[in-house]
Length: 299
Image 1 (cartoon, rainbow, N blue to C red):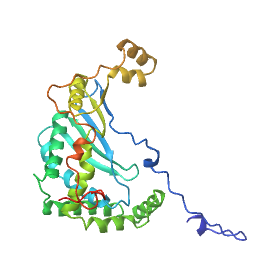
Image 2 (image 1 turned 120 degrees about the vertical axis):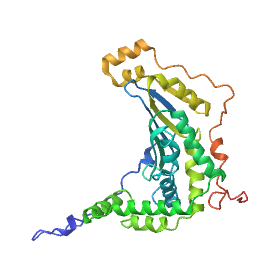
Image 3 (image 1 turned 90 degrees about the horizontal axis):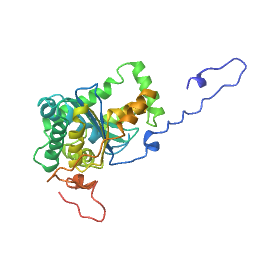
Image 4 (image 1 turned 180 degrees about the vertical axis):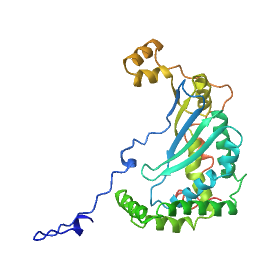
């Protein structure tokens, strides 16, 4: 430590105590699930989506598998790129796992048709979970290489390496965490990717996930109705309510005239209403790591 390296003539040597790890976000978050909020803004012409579901911590055994699975799906010319961006449904789709909050996030940005983009993303995941699509070894090798490069690039210089080591200790990680992760990324197999997809990515499209949407005013009801048809408990927040909360006195007066939130969207006749958790249960991973001790394993 810096303090232990400096001595003053005639003064005792000062030894710096280890820096305590910061409080992880996962320790203070409420852990609430099954919340969906759709907000309208007249200043935007496209829709934006963020979905979160439980993820993994830094040293979780599934961390490397999940990281490779995310890289596989979001790669250039990968499934999300071709079937979402290539189809003109959204400008982009991304997915990330925060080891601090232990949350897996999926985002769609600048969507021209948010319901269609969500349906396309869900179908991609379902195809892999049901076996209709298989993990390509060539694409898997590319995903592992790309992920490894991203990890190594973070310590390309001595300054980056020093900064990374300090951040690792501050976040409760070992100094050689990147090396540890690289070794496990190299060992990820197609079965590991499929396991991570079923266990962590499938729940992104379950009503238990938390959903936040911002959209143009004229699409508020249609988007809220779509998520209601998927079994989500949707709360709509019109622009007037946002102005009342963040717009000061004039905003409060406008919100009072608007009379609060819009009514809940009407149910869609004949739509499928999943109970929270039921969608993900259909594709539950049956490997030894996921099977309950009192249930037999299945392939």
